[in-house]
Image 1: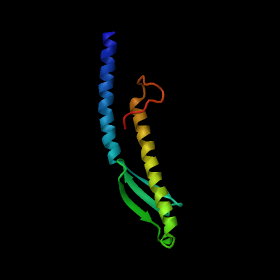
Image 2 (image 1 turned 135 degrees about the horizontal axis):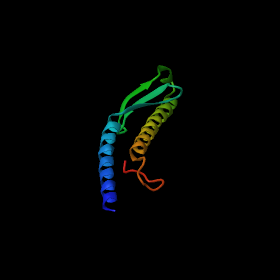
Image 3 (image 1 turned 90 degrees about the vertical axis):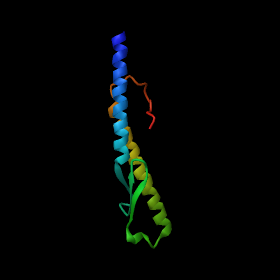
Image 4 (image 1 turned 60 degrees about the vertical axis):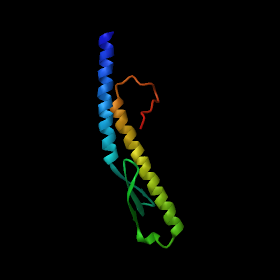
Length: 106
């Protein structure tokens, strides 16, 4: 029993170290979301900070459409970051006896 608990503690410590490393990697990650078939692109880092916005000049005539497309591109970038974070965390926590649907703290 003691060996089992010690093994779980070691496994938890290792997972914590891996999670810290993964969190740092995810914060440095950059993704680009796009909308309108690439007419608007938003590059965002893993902390959800927008780094760059690219807008096709053909959209400048229609401000409302431009606003909608930039909003959609930002949302696409946010979704891509979330998906990458979930995938990374599932790789780290695979093999641990976590309850179904358990979400990590970030």
